[in-house]
Structure formats: structure tokens, C-alpha cells
Length: 437
Image (cartoon, rainbow, N blue to C red; front, side, top):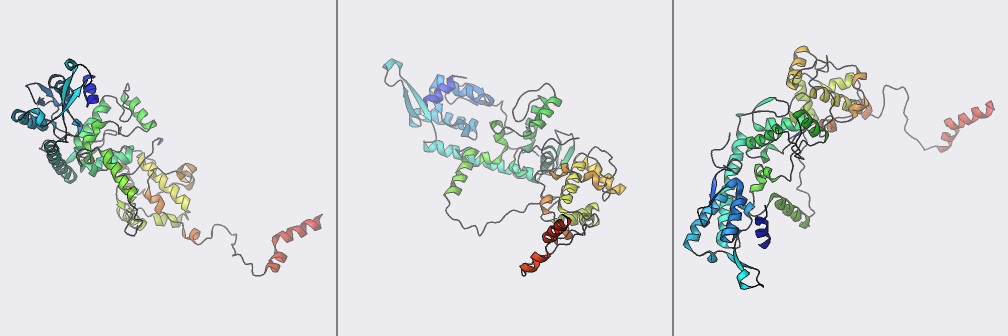
């Protein structure tokens, strides 16, 4: 408590890794609550804006000798203060607060009594739980509205492409096309306010991750790309209010909740994994955002929706496994750069390129093999491209024979070692060498 008091008294190349992903409420929310609303002192008429909570806490300590524990874990601070303002008019403060005597070993005239209000008091604990529960209900209701909302409209802050429908379309686009991910859409709440806050940072030429200020947007974007700073700073707790996990348990931060989950896993001595089920890794279509759980389904989709037949190309071009890998990475890269691989025409968006290729019949128009069968395409265009892991060897490779070569392959037979030694190529070479010498 003494530490709290002291604290209050002192005031064309892809250089970045690509990766595939995964209406405002009328109710008062943490993210959209009015930070300018005034919070009243529990003892007097002093008011302070909610955005300057420290000013009010300092006033409580200096003028009224009151310390409130764990302020940051109080879900609705204004309502909390109103409740205790009423209660302190009904009963003496000593009925609710622990008394802390400072300078207890010094002269009596230098001693002061401070009062600590915390959740050790059952009434305070119940109040905090009720406020937390109400806030959680509001947040979950808001999250559900955002998950079901199909009227979302927003422009991507990186490429100015417009998105409509559900918020997940934009969030997945930023993760996939710009390597910027704020997490799974279903984990986010008050998404519009979150994106507004991020855009303000860009407008202020401020990096999301290191939060340095730059002279212009071009320099800022180059910095974020080269330093891989296209992510938010986890140590900036201003973002906590946009993640549902931060509302789940009273009196604990999300780091503590996660660490407790880890401890429970470590304590679990049951090694029976019989009921464990792996979540399937979905392969993403080369031309759109469609995902399927296996190679057969994604190939069927690409053939029916985009007239692209990967199996046919593999057979006609006799593609070995690593050639398939390079072809997929080449197509991914060309489409990411909004370029038709059939005619090299450059367009504004990937969707325009796909439409052009369909209309011009360029979907199956693969360039000469020397154009894409290059070492640089060994490396995935997207780090988590599950399509690459689903590729299979060609039939000739799976049978263990290379039909492009006339060299026969025989199984090893050691049933007659004497005959092998007599007929071995090595013996023949030795005899030839001896006769020539």
C-alpha cells in the first residue's frame, strides 16, 4: 500500500514473409466508452475525466488518505465510485477499509492513517464481480453482433482496397496480403474502434510495433516491411480492450489466465491421448480465398470455379514433386503481384487478374518451364501454404522409376554371390585395365 501511495505521488520483390490467415453496439462498451465523462470523488464534489484516472486517485490519497487496490481490474470505474460514494455517506469509512498507519515508529505528530479499499472486503468483492459480469455480457453480445454482421464496410489501410460484408474478409486480407495480423476475427471485439486506432497511428507516421515516429508514410511502410514490424506491440495495454480474453476472469490479466492454463497442463499426469483430434490444415485455392481440407477437394474447386486443372498439368508436363512446388510458388507470387502469368499483364488487384485470365483463357497458359523452374521458387511464397504439403509425386516417381531416362533399375539379388562377383562390372574393368597395360 505504501508503494501505491508513493507511486501516486510521483507522475516487385516480396521481401516480407506472406502468411494465410484464419455495427457498433448501442450499449456502453469499454472500447467506445466516453473517456471524457467525469468521475466523482467518493467524499467530495471533486470531478476528474475518466481518461485521467490518476488525477482522481492522487486526489483521493492526498486529500482523503484513501487508496483503492487494483484499479485496473475494476470493470466499470465510474459505477464503482458512485456505489462507494453512496455507502460512505451511510457508514464510517472504517467499517469498510483497512487502516494503514505510516511512520508507525516515529513521533505521533508525524503519523498518518491511510485507508485501503480492496476486494478482501466481501462487499467490495461482490461489487467488482457484478461489474465484471455485466461488462462481460455486454462484450459477448457485442462480439456476437460483429461476428454476424454482414454490413461491414472498410478500406484496407495498406492498399486502399474496399471490403464489404463481414469484418473477417478484411482481417484475413490484411493477414494474407500484407502479413499484418491482429489475431483471429472471432477473438476481436469493437473491431471498428480497433482499426480506427491503428489508422490514427499510420496517420501520425507511427510504427505499430516499435511505435517510433517517421517523417513520412513511405519511410514508415518501408521500415515496417523491412523490420517485420507489421504487428502490434503486445506490451501496449491500450490494445487489451479489443481482445475478448481480457474480459473473462475477474482480478486476473490475460497473461495470468494463460499461465494458469499452462500450469494445469503441466500438472495433468494423464498421458491418454486417445481422444485427441488434430484440426485439419486447409489448403487455399490459387485464385481465390476458398479453403478445402484435402488436395482432391481443392483441385476439384479450382477446376470447376477457375478452369485450372493441376492434375492435367502435372501429367502433360511430367512434373516431378519439386517442380510442382516451384510451379505453385510461381503462380502464387505472380498473382500476389497482380500479374497474369499467361501474358504478364499487370492489373490493380488480384481479383482483376483472375477475371482477366478467365476471360482471356490464360488460366492454363503456363509459361515455358525455364521461366518458372528456378531455384528461387523452392521457397514458399506463403509461409503456411498447406497446398504445398498436399502435393504428391508424379506416377513415375511413385513407382520408383524415371521414364525420362533409359537407365534400367534392377533389384538387388544376393542369392548367388559367386555369380555376382564373376559378372561384376568391377571385374570387367580390372581385366580391361590389365590387358591394356
